[in-house]
Length: 328
Image 1 (tube, rainbow, N blue to C red):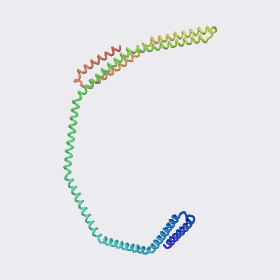
Image 2: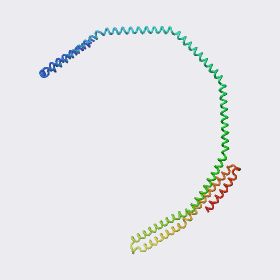
Image 3: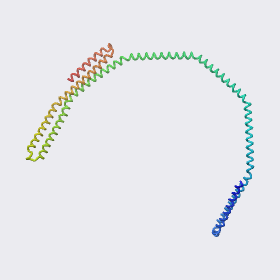
Image 4: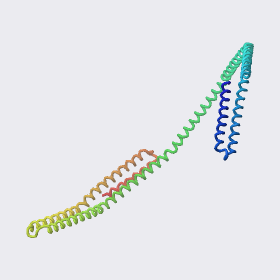
C-alpha cells in the first residue's frame, strides 16, 4: 500500500507540473488574445491536483484501516467455525440418542404392514373360492344360450335357403334360355347381313381400284410412247418406235385383261369365303346355345319343370331351323 501511495503522489506531482508548464508556455504567445482560456486551463489543472490529493488520502485511510478489517474478518471466521462444530456435535448426539427409538418404530411398522398383507391375501383367496362356482355357472349358462342362438340362426338360414332355392333356380334357367335365344337371333341376323353386303362392297371397291390401276398404266404407256416419239430420230429409229408402240399396246391389253379377270373372280371368291365363315360361326353359336340350354335343363328339378322344359325345347328347335334356312 505504501508503494501505491508513492506512485499516486508522484503521478499527481507530474500532472501538476505538466499543467503548470503547459500553462506558462501557452500563456506567452496568447497572453493578449486568450485570457479566459488561460484561466480555465489553470482551474482545470487545480482540480486535477485536488483529485490526486483525494486519491492519496483514500489510499492512506485504506492502509490504516486494513489490519483492523482483516482482524475482524478472521475473528468472524473463527466464531463461525466454532458454531458449526458445536452444531455438528449436537446433531451427532441427537442422532445417537434417537437411533434406537427410530429403529424400533420402523421394525414395528414393518411387522404391522406384513400382517396386513397376509390378512388381505387370505381375504382375497376366500372371496375367490366363494365366487368361483357362481362365475363358472354363469359362464356355462351364457355359453349354452349362445350355442342355442347359433343353432336357431343356422336352422333359419337353412330354411330360408330351401324356400328360395327353387324360385332362384327357375329364374336363372329362364334368363339363360332367353339369353341363348337372343344370341341365336343376333348370330343369324349378322350372318344374313354379312351375306347380303359383302359381295356388293367388295366388288365395287375392287372394280374401282382395278379401273384406276388400268387407267394409270394406260397413261404411263402413252407418256412413254410420246417420250419415245420425241427423243428418237425420225428416219433412223422408225423400226424401234414401231416396236415400242406394239409393246405399249400389249401392256395396255394385258392390264385390261387382268382388271376384267379380277372383276369377274372377286365377288364369287369373297362371297363364298365370307358366306362359309358366317355359316360356321352361326353353327358354332347355335351349338353353344343348345349346350347351355341342355345344361340348364339338366340342373332343374325333373318333375317340377317338365312342361317348361318341353316348351323350351320346341322353341329352341324352331330357332335352330330358322338360322339354318336363312344361311342356306
